[in-house]
Length: 410
Image 1: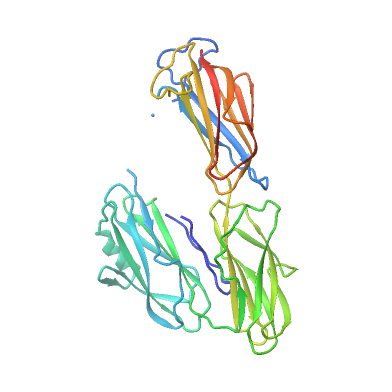
Image 2 (image 1 turned 120 degrees about the vertical axis):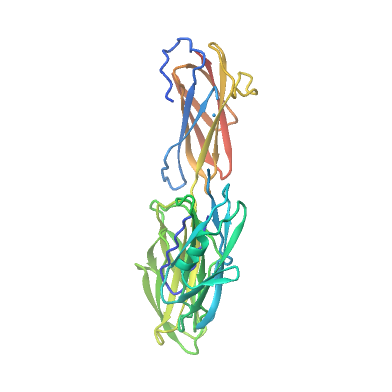
């Protein structure tokens, strides 16, 4: 699941996100009864920044073909307790979305130490002083299919940590299949009062392709809310792995200094950054921290939510009779019969796909006959039994296109 990472005061946060080969048949020989005709099609593509992606394949056979699951949900993405405070509580429902009774082991990660201290774990009416005690109790507690438990994490906030951020991540792991787990996280940011404001404070969900040489710019505003002039150190940072800082306010690197802002005055600060070649859905947060030169203990963070988008193509190949209507399905075909293969590509990703190319190498049990496009935009060609389909323009998010390949059974 997608998880949002929110950071205050330039502290790096790490959020762990867990939850028969067929014998060759001579060309033109009659295919024996019962032979499985195995056909594979592949598609290659790039995105608008010319990032190349791994080819995707689909196959179809003309004759015909105990899961554990957990879903951990944080009750709040962010919380802002007082500093200091005691006996605050985070809620994590743990749902059994598998297909049988299961039990779980709970683990946790606190990204930045010293901001919160966990004092106990509560399930139902019982509070456990440690994770070990909690897991001992949970070992004998089966969760029925479709049922859930709620783990309440009781914690205290350290004095003097207003404005600092830490991410609490709770992970539940199946005891029946330890390779299956899920997690969710809550960002804990104790309240801060400061004389400088950096905006915006999140809410953008800026979507970016991997840069591949293209830099992006985000503009923050720094406002001096003090009663006199002041200057500020600026530091850009990010808690995740997607962002690389290029420059701050025209200065290469992740830091810069602006001087002599009058009381009530503001200045726009451009942060130039790039996005790495990371997976679609990767979330990171671009953070700009402004620290008073007159009072270094006074500072504020602005941040912008970033998520990485990519095209992601799926390909489906279905065999029909020559009428293009009746699926071959589990049926058989005979020598001399024509098969119509419909090859469909769909952009199931979060960005448009470009330079989409489908290749279909028909097996030796078939002889290529013709191709038909669903609509304009396809350039279809073949060399012998090797069919290529190039789609012009972009394949939009959630869009699908297809073409037909007609072949006869040898």
